[in-house]
Image (cartoon, rainbow, N blue to C red):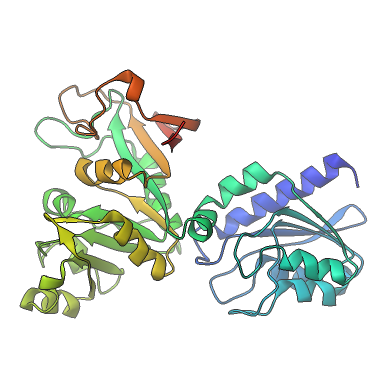
Length: 368
């Protein structure tokens, strides 16, 4: 098989994997393509947690045609029993003769064991294809495994001159309808949407996904050290239908208000605070232990700045609306950077247009 063909089929596996984005965590979303006689005979992508992995889907669709075929898969097949049997064994049993793997799985339960199992069965195994592209695609999963915390994305809507609101506080709407739909899509692709109590008090957001179709709903989380959240807020009122959690200090766990919130469907978790602030590493560790591997920050400047100062924001998405406001409403007014020589650098910057709005995606570089 030529290098061009290998690249073509791996790119197809990457594209197929996108069908599972945001739908299968804490499993990684993976794509598989089975090829025989230079023809694609089946494709598969990871289903919801506890269901088939991408390789199993592709093998089921291929049936007996899988014998002596070639498999392309973006991530190393698993070799252990978890919610499902090991994919490596299924590949062997199906009679696949050759496997091309995008990247190793750093999960200690896998980490080369899947490749070893395939090789021991006499299958030709090749790995290391389109690695940068696949690592970016699986950035949340890789962060979860390697850093043992969720991947954190800061998302905010801004005017062209970088303001999140007018001086009178109005902000609806900075961006157009299609850009707002994209923001809802981002919610569906992340396990958690996190905000602070001040955003709840000022904006009263729902933080759920409101798009037509069957979209996964994230866990909505509010950092609320003094349990100030109004019981009549949108966040609380929809918590019986859309999962919601408030993180507060231990002193508030046994209060009447906490009981009312629980009755309305809100989950209450407690973490210690210092001077009214949570340790953000502990917040992420709590979510990590709950098997959430991606967090979307939709919050005000205080929490956004705190995450940045702790070097906990992995990706930034700024959605620029085609408006200019002027004024002082900057999204990061107190970051504490006083010189251009101390600026926070970013890399892997990309831009895309959504109608008349512009989405800028970038990655902070904390140490050069």
